[in-house]
Length: 233
Image (cartoon, rainbow, N blue to C red; front, side, top):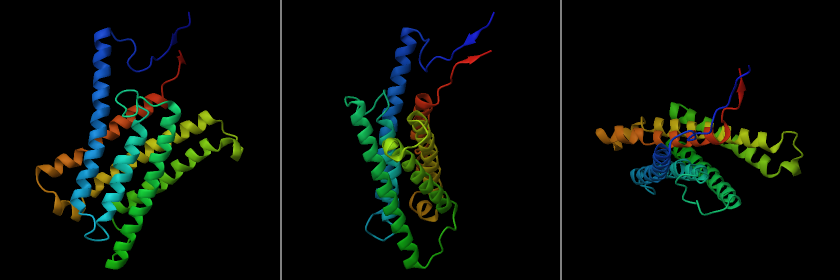
């Protein structure tokens, strides 16, 4: 007698009380991710004191791009706790495009400021783990944007890959970009500038802040695009 095993979507198969508890916890996690992304952006912006130097704009631009815009661009598709829950799917897609475009603009601007700062100070480039990780993040961001453009202009480009596969590539690359951005932001907290600015217990608290939104985003993307398929044993 053959036995088919099918994995249910996350949250199914629970009792009524357990299901509502699960939904409430997911909504709380998503809202906490919104708050953490915004809070981390504000903290880094305040610590960098924008305008005091060329370098001071680099943390501002990068935190706005990756901690805020990219986080919101992904979480707006969340069914639990999205700030744009009243919008249609088409409107959410357009907002996603806008957020991702802002990520590219902010990242390019932040890159320009750090290059200008190092050139003025006559400091070498790409000598730290943070800078190397940042380059990987920027390259992955450009690749992810490329997959997004392929999805938008699929017919015009006459691509052989079907749109669902391109969407999967885009989502997977987006997950990689977000995780790389999280690691890059975390590595910045080991820099001399950051350790001279934040000390004591606050440094450990801020070190853990970028990890929470990344867990929520990773869970959302894997549940939406990488669900386990039916297997036969």
